[in-house]
Length: 370
Image (cartoon, rainbow, N blue to C red; front, side, top):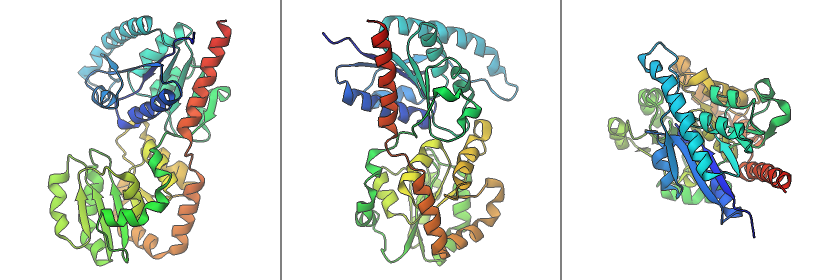
């Protein structure tokens, strides 16, 4: 009789933590179709909706982060932490996980802390080049740390680190054959170059304002624009669909076709986006959000820019937008160099490699318990 495999995953707050966890769960489910899966998230955060949409059960903890500025919200943090540790303990006692996997976010802290204290194998997956406080604290106790960037031994014990990359959508790997299909999907002129603008699913106000300021100049430069405004801003910018070659979208669903159709890309520098863009390998300008913890998007972008794989344009320097874009679209040698260097950093098999590490931990525990 096969031993029962119970897999507990925790990650959330943003899509950058949620989707890697779901990708890992999907690969584990493929290998262990009879395993039981349970997610732990933070109540009232997006994982409570997204995880069930992907077919997995989730339990919510009453937890949030500490505000970096003085805030009355911080007064409730100790009570939330005690509540979350108590409830994580109850969840783990009832579910009896074979392994606990954390992908970042508030709920993963108490969940992995309790698991480690009970001797359950633990693994965290750090998406960014500069880890968040939760993973920094957890790293001292967990068994294995899967990372996407070099030089993270500045923060974690070197013997625990495995460079795996971040999970990405598998349909991106075969995008090269999708070019014609992508052009047809977006009704593009194949004789013109296309700029893809990405600000995330909710949108990025600063990027939208920048594109609005320069949209007529882009049209005059004979550039087509696929502009993902985000659902929060779509109504403000959909009027620009009237310009020749411009199309706005609240959200883009067929990302494999979207990337295939693009010649140049402007994007935020979230870890998941960067991992996808390394596989896509199109000349890219990163405009990192300066409003994230530890300014980690800028650090993510710099890790690519330092290897000459992309261009960094900080929000405080957007006045140079036209100059930066003009140099990129007119310099084919630069385009090729950026593209080639970006592709060198791609790790398309990240999900499989992470699950290989998870299997090793489960096998070690299984052999020790015999």
